[in-house]
Length: 212
Image 1 (spheres, rainbow, N blue to C red):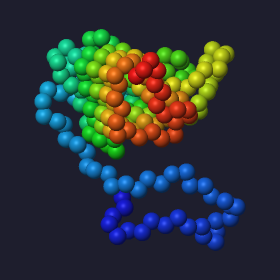
Image 2: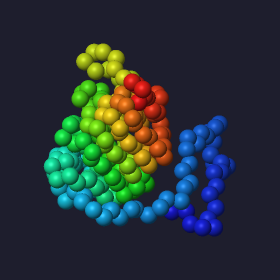
Image 3: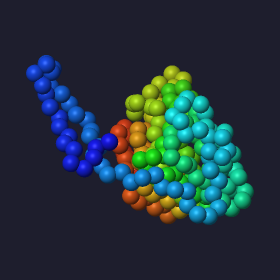
């Protein structure tokens, strides 16, 4: 934590003998505190068994349970502060229309897909949105892939996305998208993407098709 009045210095000392040093990125930002769970009808992924502890366990079943309960009850899905991991994508289909997925803030709630696309093409996306009027906000989304192209079944494939598919009027707001070929690949119509940040993509950060 950098406090008010602190000094941040990048320095090459006498014992640093490399001919050059490359600094890829330094994030210096006043991060807000985690947002509390909003008022209203929410289903928490933690209440369904997801553990925000950055471990290698698969939180996918618990998150899918929260998605199903929220969709059936006209509610929204809450991701508290912490790090969640899934092995295969979350798929939002017609029964999830109008659903909102919200975290405690892009500095505080992380959702990662742990299966690289080199293992299975089923892992190409993190959240697959084929439902209309879905909102995704206040989350950091990441994936384990560390290259743009990889070999699958003996063929060269592109790496994966974070948010993809064609649900109309998708809204993505205040998210942090890290890694992936094109972090958002959207072919629906009426989509809104606002106040997001993209870091370390392997191709275009936002790919729009079909007059999105």
